[in-house]
Image 1 (cartoon, one colour):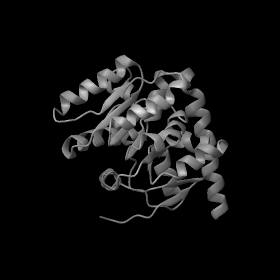
Image 2: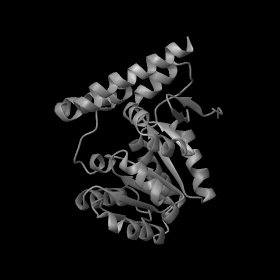
Image 3: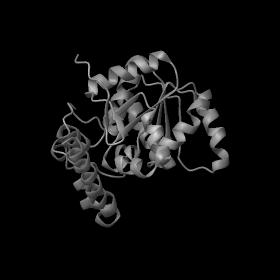
Image 4: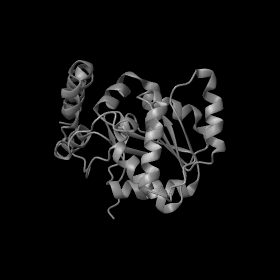
Length: 248
């Protein structure tokens, strides 16, 4: 296995790992047993970090930061870094559920609607009959309930926590409550629950392979995704070009 050092890219750290290397890193973290937070970065996250110092600090504290977006892989290579592939949040999520069934890890599912989270739990139980699920909860709650939820997750003795909130809510929530939850490995999975439950569709494999998953989502919801993908991508490209000029 090639040992790749963490790099610094556009204000964020990044671990240039393959999926298999990332899974190996997670196994080591779970075995260690200390509560940690995993994050992924994409163009939108880089833009957010540029405007939100708190979010930047939270992300850069993570012991494992994957390249979720193909734009991150392209940008890193353009700036001279060796990044082998992207490791998307949803792909890592599914790979970890499989690994949990093999290793006896207990996952907890938190987020989305009650119908969606139940559908995801049922799907994974059907896929992996040996999977021991620590618990699940929908993502609708009052702020006054947050501590009670964190304590319930702690009491479930989960090994993995999957939080299906949007950014930056998921990063901030995990960061704030991980000391109480004490889950060895917690990660935000965004809209992954909706995809696995069949509520939303993911781009075809060929579009994923060539980095056009963002385009598929934009075509599905052009008005809602215009700011995120068109304006956001322009802002991201501007940051990449500015960084390139600094290094010239």
